[in-house]
Amino acid sequence: EPEVTQTPSHQVTQMGQEVILRCVPISNHLYFYWYRQILGQKVEFLVSFYNNEISEKSEIFDDQFSVERPDGSNFTLKIRSTKLEDSAMYFCASTQTGDYGYTFGSGTRLTVV
Amino acid sequence: QKEVEQNSGPLSVPEGAIASLNCTYSDRGSQSFFWYRQYSGKSPELIMSIYSNGDKEDGRFTAQLNKASQYVSLLIRDSQPSDSATYLCAVTSGGYNKLIFGAGTRLAVHP
Image (cartoon, rainbow over all chains, first blue to last red):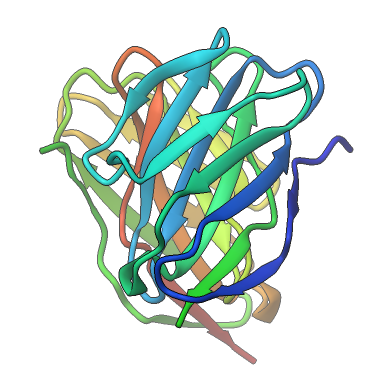
């Protein structure tokens, strides 16, 4: 069964450093998303991406965040200057039509120290 | 602010019993409704989707939707210890179908 692949599975970074989280969505999917889940809290929407541009973003997705689809297969989330409160699981998801349930990747656990 | 509400639990049921999980949502424009299962430290796994009022059955799982009451439920029949997990209700919102998640209901199935 096709999978959404995320790397790395765990990243530890120092406060103020830049991190890039990587995702390879399912190949024929057209809609891409990033979500995050702080430990013990809800899964929260960050950003959706369609047709090579951001289609919607949440209040969390401020100027410190950016997304790219650099080569037609990878989909990245960059955090420019990490804060302690950015520590969370980050999930990439994709869907073919946007109307059906997403396939989530296995997640990247980001720990900011 | 669009919200999805679930009882946090834990909901404890004996093996073989029916587990009933409930969810309400605030956005009347939501069109698609999902139940995800999440094991601790893992990503959400889609187990059921429902788009129209009524019941939808898939194996041991039945999803129920009532748009007038803004209510979604999930029934798990013949519950097994392996069903012990957090169950997340999610509804679509907005033109690009972002998902709004509830906080999840923790289900514990004891032998």
